[in-house]
Length: 447
Image (tube, rainbow, N blue to C red; front, side, top):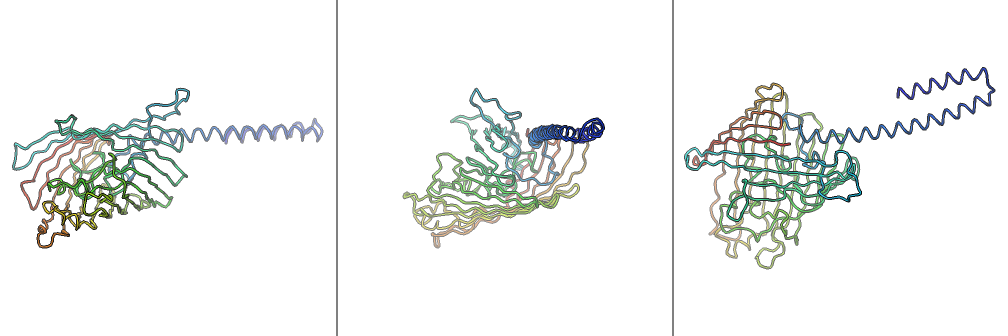
């Protein structure tokens, strides 16, 4: 703008000077020539401004992914694609990648657990290492993937696991509307999309968002996200669902997580019956978030080998967070319900029947006790209550009694060496089963 103003002033001065020595016709011709030069300069300035804007946007995206991890920043419940720029491993050799097109990201966590009443059961493990990579094709189209390794070693004789947590392409349809297609995390609760260890309190993920809402719940499908300047955000999509044929006869796995026991994770997923999800969130007030989500999907998958081929599941949750000053307060409640499973239970699954419903909730408070530079100490406490099996259809008087709710107090602290590196400690007290009481310690990071 300064350059443009100077040019205009110079043009006016020149016009005044030549006006004494030239005819009106000559002056007019000279002015037309100068106006054309000014028009060309304006066009060049617009191109330069657009290039600078694009470079700044790319830089801010990378910065947001690498540094925006402080739990006391305004709530941002975004998918990993929104920080991660998205990444490819092979392109046409004649095509030059755009600046900052390739992006690497990920996280890791290492845990130690010591049961209060079973010292021999103490365990240390490299719980997770996630390697993420992305590629930005242009300003609107991106690819992203996350490869997760659990428990350090993977073989047929080890308990480790390797899996793609996400693998999708994302495209900005307009400034406020984005679509993604592939294997991606569903926008349910707080932790499913944003589960890096630096972004939640406690050494391990909370029970509600692991047992009721299966942790890192991802599906294959198509999803849309819309955002508005008012702070309203919506999500909707159609995806694969669960598979009732995977329901185990051993109750240990289903007690841990009913939906986790029958998830498909994009591995040759049965898709005769699909799932549908929707979510709403409001972030228009600084430090405040509230919202909820709903999922409805078939689980019978039209399979002729089971007695309930049309069985389905509904999962709903609501959540809220308030970050004010040094306080971080949050709460979440979730409830799931299985439909049309009575025939499946009556057909001989009485050993471990499918429950009618499962539910849980938690309330959590954290306080930043002190902070100096990148270092901070954040003690917290959380109370949660879950039940993974309530009511059983199709068994009549043979139905098992409902288990009591699992009630857990967790008290601990997170010591941030850096917003992206945290050392955690906590103790967990199970009110209705003291044998599960434990001490946990962990190291977590993301990049």
